[in-house]
Structure formats: structure tokens, C-alpha cells
Length: 319
Image (tube, rainbow, N blue to C red; front, side, top):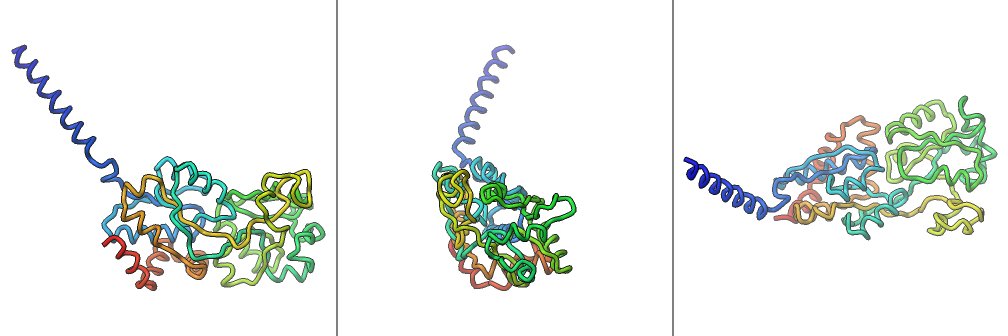
């Protein structure tokens, strides 16, 4: 009996070892879904769902992970997420380029866009503060943008993104304070309320975005951006502090994929690299969600239904 048990245990061990070798020979990513990031603004979420719909049509399992923008790099570099459809130069270039250089994230190419991210105000505000859009008019008009809780300082509304607004206020000696809202829809809400009452307001805005489709307005023109402005206090009009400049204008908009995705799903990597959107695409997509109240999923399907030629072109890449 003991001899029988002994040989049985040996056979079991050999079987387990053989199974382990089989599992090691199996592609690591074979059954893993492609995970797309859904960040905290509408167009990025819609583009992610458009990508997800196309991947699903190719028989590729997909999953979505909701995150704030400042968490995207850990998720991509760790392989917890595979796709980010909107990487903005104005707020994300530094982190993105570092991750690409370190081989943790792959540059999946540019969209056909020209972007800008900056302080923005509705056109009617220039009647109350004629010096705008020149940034030097801001202090003279700070009281226009003050709230009962801002101690006489002008208020600038922004979102949870990687922007140096407080450093810029300090470097340019602006009598302003920053109110950080939780996401893009929260900014849209304060903007819509202010415009309905024709009240002065300064918000973080970007192009492409739905705002430019509906409302006239302008970006504040700060001293032009230069890379030295970020790190060299001696550069620019303030020789003591960095960030005495605006954000880059004429910026790029890219896609990012995890370093694992080309191995995990070559087809998915090809599709994401091929998917290119324009300023008009993104502005209209955002309009569908933020103004026309379509869900993100419905806006994605709406775009695909109205752009069947581009959809077909992208899908043929993996045939």
C-alpha cells in the first residue's frame, strides 16, 4: 500500500510538472482583454468606446477602467491599462515623453488636430474688461471674477489635470485663486450657469471642444510658452520663478498604448495606431455628450454610424 501511494505521488508530481510546462508555453496574454482607459473628460471617453467597439468587431475582448488623468501613467506603465486615446501636449507631454523614453509606454501616433489648453473667457467679458485677452489686464479686472468666498481675488476654475496654474499665478503676480473642480462636466456646468446670466467667468478650456461650436470666446494670451519657462527661473519676465508664461499653443494630440499591447494583441495595436480623429470630430463628439446629453456609449455608436467608411478602413487592417 505504501509503495502504491509512493508511486501515485510521483505520477501526480510528474503530471503537475507537465501541466506547469504547458501553462508556461501558452502565450501570457492569450485570454486577457484589451483594457481601455476612461478618463475624466467626455471626448476621451467616447474615443475609448469607439476603439472598444471596433476591437469587439474584430473578436477582441475589451474592458474599460475608469481613472483620473493623473493616474493614467501608472496604469499604462504597469500594464493595468492598454490604451489611452487622448494624450494632450499642453498638460501631459512631460510625463508621456518620460514614459516613452523609459520604454514603459508606446507612442501610438498623432491625431490630425491642433490643440490648445489655456485660461478662457466668453466674448461678452471683453466689454467689462477691454484689455483682454492680454494677460496684463487680469489684475485690473480681478474683482470682476471674484466670488463672495475669494477674499477679493479673481477666481479661475480648472479641473483635476496636470497644469501649473498656481505656479503661473505666483510667477506673474496675479491676484487670483484657483478652484479645482472634479471633472470636465463640472467645468461645463459653471460655464453654462455663468453664460446664462452673462456673468464674467474664467475657466480652463481646450480646443477641440464643444465650447467652440456654441460660444464665442477667447483664450488669455500669456507670455508665449518656451520649454525653458518650466525650469529656468532666469527665463522670461520674472527672473526669480519659473512658469511666467502660458501653455503651448498649436499642440499635438496623441494616443498611447502599453508596452505589452503589441504582444498581447497585434491587431489591437494596429487599430489604435490607425485611428485618427480631427478637431471637428472631437468637437462634435463632445457636443453630443455635454450638450445633447447622449451617453458616452450612444455617442460612440452615433459617430461610427456616421463614419462607416473610416470604420471599414480601420477594420481591414487586421484582415
